[in-house]
Image (cartoon, rainbow, N blue to C red; front, side):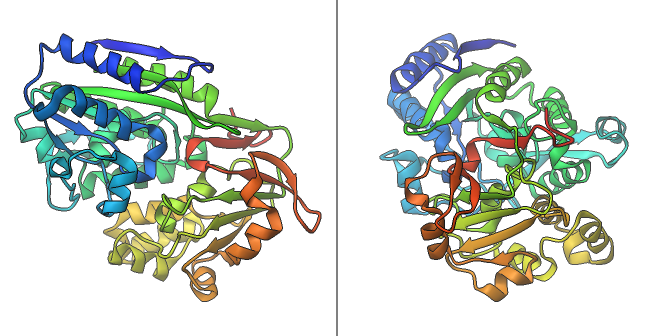
Length: 426
C-alpha cells in the first residue's frame, strides 16, 4: 500500500503539466497498464479538475483507457452539454452511465458491531458495501478513482472511498450511509476527515476492495477571489494515507471561520452546475454553521427547476418537505415510501433549518407555492441579483442596495463556513 505522489500547499497552483508528470509516473510504476477504468465525478463537481485529469489519462493511455464511469451516485446521467463542460473532447464512446439501482453488486457487509461502535450507538444495521459491476468484474488492471477532497455534509470530507462506495455504489449502501450520517448530525461531521461514515467506508475498503486495483487521484481546490478555483494539491495513492494527507490541506484552504455570525448570508448557485435542490442545497449545508440564530440564508439559484434528481425523489421531497430532524424521523417510521428511500430522508434533514434560521430560496424554475410547500420562503432570483449586486461580488462582507449588511459566498461547493461561536466549529 503506497502513497505514490504528493504535491501541495496553500500556495501551490497545479495544472495540466503536473497531471501529465504524475500520471506518467503512476503508469510507469504499474508497468504500462493495458485495460484502465477511470471513475471521475460528474459535472456538479466540475471544480475538482477531474475532467482535465481524465483527459490527460486518455492522452497518455490512448486505447488502453477503455471505460470512463462518472460517479453519479443518485444523480441523473450527464447530457451532452454537461459532458462537454466536464470532459471536453474526451471520446463519448468511453462514457458508461452508472445506474445505482441495477448496475451494482454487494461485495459484503461491514458488521453491525463495527457500525454501532463507529456511530456511538446511533445506528446498528450492517452496512452493505456495493459497487458498480464494472469496478468489481470489469477485468481492468488499473482503476483510477478521481476526485476532490473538500468539506462534505455526509462524509465530512468528500471523495476517496466515497467515490467508489457511494458515487459508484448501490441504493442500499447509499440509503444507509446517508441516513446514519444525518442522524449523527452533519454539523458534527462537516470538514472532519475522521467521522462515523468515513470509518465505515474505509473498513469496507479494507475488507472488500483489497483485490481490486484501485488507485485514488485526489485534488484539493481553493476558490480564490478574483482568480477562481485553483488546484492547491494533487495526491495519488492506494491507501488511507492519501486521503488524510489531502484532507489536511483541504482543512487549511476550504474551511472558513467568521468572527461574527451573519444575520444574512447570500449564496450564488452556478446554473451550469445546480439544477435541483438535491444538489443546490449545498448552499444551506455549507453555510448553516455560520448563519446567526434567527438569520436567513438566501439561495440565489436561477438554474434550479426541480427538487429531486428523479421523479420518485422529487415527489417525496414535495410530499414531506424540509422539516426538522424529529419530524423526518417520525415520517420515516410511519411511511413506507419515505422509509424505503432513506437517502431522501437524509437529504431533507441536511436541508432543514431545524427552526433555528430561515431559508429564502430564489429558484429560477420553482413557483412560490412549490418553494413554500417544502418549508422555505420564496424569493425572486432577478430581484436578488439586483438587491445584492451579485454579478460583481467576491466572497465576504457587503452591503445591499437597501443598506443591509450581508455575507456573500460565490462557490459553496468549495468550502465550509462557520461562526467561531458555533458549538461544532473547530
